[in-house]
Length: 314
Image (tube, rainbow, N blue to C red; front, top):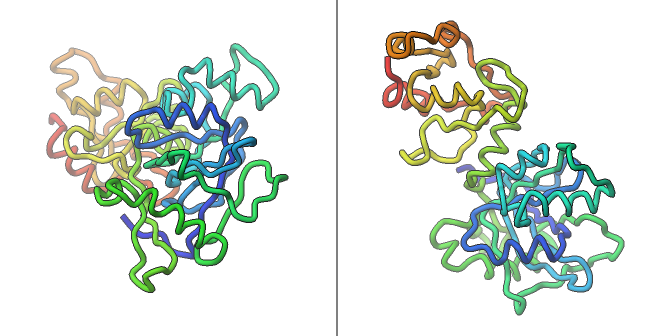
């Protein structure tokens, strides 16, 4: 994974006790959703950079860290489907209650949107390791950004680094690497490995909430599909994913439908011979895949070739 260029930064975001306490009790979670009650685009970090968790008063301490992957706005129901308790709440009902407390409106039916700051490889500190945020102003409402190549951010990171640099770092779980030179120079960060929930949310965002084959926009029937399955050596990478209507996802996973490295849709004629039906799907053969706007998010031809060779039933 490529190292992020530019001056390294960290962001200290304010959260509440309920979110923190729910997540720190979870065993070995690989991702969390740091949600906003209403979507407000988050541009303070580059992918891989650290997002620090700071508790509200009366604690007023930094209590953990995760590594930023992507910002996505999602309906609250979809955010729950993607992350479940990794939203920092034990149920969708409790999550909605907390969101609506900040939104100052209650709704039993509205599937309102929340902002989702997708954070990977979180670490929650023991109370003895809680850290005071340097130069913190009490009128800060949501958070503050620190450059890590200058003070006070450099000293802050020096306190954080040992707390994430144990066995997890040695195992390659944490996305931070030591600087080459000077020894105590600014850290370098790599694009973090996505968890399953972050993969789902990122695919929805990358494909602008449209099925890659039909352009369907009804979000509850769209699913993030792995091109090379996770259980067979695939990764939770955006370029290893497609956003597909649920029935097409099933056909893709079972090999009755594939996409060539040239982004052409191909449907197997065995649909008709085996099920005596399928004309609607067979008509999709030759359609061009609708690809994400960002080139880095588009399907990797080597993963599509794997699907053609190892999954498609011609």
